[in-house]
Length: 268
Image 1 (tube, rainbow, N blue to C red):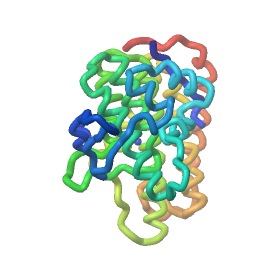
Image 2 (cartoon, one colour; image 1 turned 180 degrees about the vertical axis):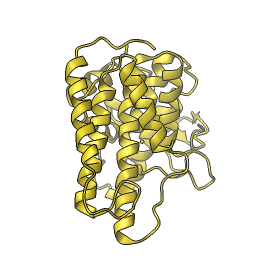
Image 3 (tube, rainbow, N blue to C red; image 1 turned 30 degrees about the vertical axis):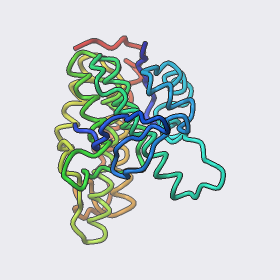
Image 4 (tube, rainbow, N blue to C red; image 1 turned 60 degrees about the vertical axis):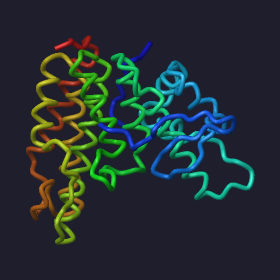
C-alpha cells in the first residue's frame, strides 16, 4: 500500500553496493566507504524498509510530511562510544542499503517509495554526482519518481510537483545570491530548466492537479521576496525591486488553488 501525500508547500545507478555477503558474521555490504555493515545495527525503521515494508514509513510521512523524512532516513541508532564521524559513515551505509535491498523490486509502488525516500530523506547530501560521474543519491531518487509518474502513479506525480517546486526555488535562490555577490551561479547540470518546470507545473495545475497552483504561487511569491532582499532577480540580474507582476501572479495562482484545492486530481 502507498499513499499520495499532498502538503500545502511548506531534489540511475546505485553507488556500487555489490550485495550482501553472508560469511558467518556481520553482513558486509560493498559501498563507497568499504566498511562492514550489520543491518541489525541500523534500527527497526530501516530494517523494515530492507524487507520492502514501507507501511510504517508512510504512516510517519502522513504525520510528519515530506520535511520529516530525513529524521526517518537517518534514524540509525548510535553505538556506545561511537564517534559522530563513525556514526555518520555507518548511518549513510544503512540509508543506502534501503536502495540496494529493493533494487530488484520493479513494482510501481516500490519505485515510488524508494524514490520518495531517497529524494526527501537526503536533503543534506546536495545534488552533485558521484566522483565517477554516476548519478548522486538525490538524482537517483528523482529519476525513480519521474519513472513512477510516467508509469501512471498519481502519488509520484504529486511528489514531483513538490520536487519541481524545490528545484525552481533553489535555482532562483542560487542565481539571485550569485548575482548579488558578482560571481557565476552553479546549478546542477542534470536539473531541468526552471522555465520548463514552470510550464509543466502550469499544465499539471490546469489538468486537474490543484497542488501545482500552490507551487506556482509560492515560486512567484519567493521571486518577489528575492528581488527585495538581494536587489537581483531569479536570473541574477540587478533590479530596483520586485516586479509587481510577480505578486499579482502569486495571488492569482493562490486564488486558483483555493478554488480547486478540493478537486479530485485527474490521471492525465
